[in-house]
Image (cartoon, rainbow, N blue to C red; front, side, top):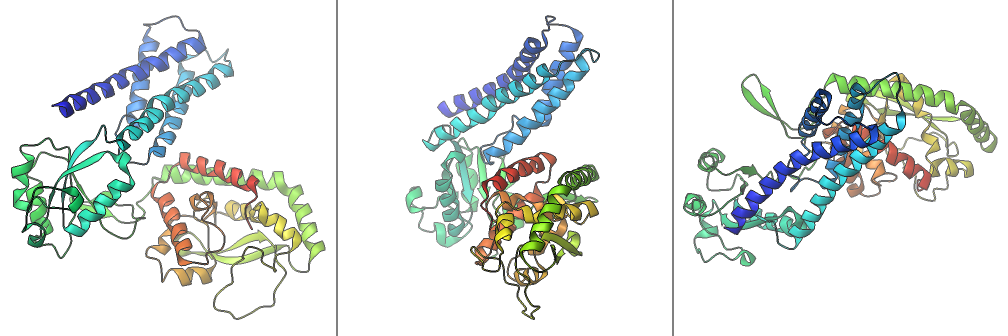
Length: 460
């Protein structure tokens, strides 16, 4: 009874949010732009535009299971879009920039408080056991154990498992009264309807393995004969899969890695890369000259270190860096030795260049040529590629997009020497996560965070 009331109140609250948000944003607009007309056609039109932008960006969808930080790019995009829309309601001959800046800041601040902070506190409440939803788990004992472990690790998700049903006789043949702590099973698949028809269930989670005593098709048939939302737990050991639904004619397909991105995004990204690289090279050319002079004075050898790397779709290209090490004699080692912390091969000036990642700046030439992008998975030496592609599933999928001067892995600390396989696995995880979530907002965030990391001077 209480749960039903709370769920209805939650739905009412969500609808109230949908009404309050446009009103508050209109109110911000009126104050900053000194508008006194409350019911003009332009104001009604702007109200409808705000409502449309908020809903298109799915600001009201549940973030119970999702990473909460994903809502911040949405808020940024909504605030930017609405600020631009303001232009259509202003006199372009007499425009003041300050109200636009103020509108963006206040709009972003309000939405951040209303949607991010509120959800943050909701998660704190769920950790205490409140605002939870009832769920049923269907699967074998090992899958159920893993599921409970995840609930313990992330209590803010707010799901409470009230029943567990197993497809395997050994899990439920000694059926006892339910006790989640001892992992007691409520019954087999045929018992599901007898339980859920008399209880308030919000969600069914299920898994399936080849060893289960029921086929996947039969399990889907049974679960599909219910009215409850159902989610399949994919117990694959690869977290970097994109898993996007696609269609081949009338056939349903599941994109495993790297679904196609619209040409609009790729073209915009390529244009930004070209303009930024050209501007950067022109602006930094005096600095490049001084760095080149210092490198030649300190040690013998070329100014640039040129190395072949794998690029987009596995195409090999020559990547440029300022030389930071003493020139070594050519060797026939099959495996290239990575630079380590305190590496004696690094020159004194080279140490300074590496500390602030200045040695990477010549890659602006690669970006200008189209071999690289500003943002993307960092290209590895060919020797490293050939070594790790045999050890890490999906490793070469990182080459489905242009390599970048910086990327998601670098801003999360997954850079430098990969002395252990786990370090490279973490880097690949970030690379594929970036590829699975391509958008310009993420690119801007990565670029901003990169400058912050450069100034910290933690590279070596």
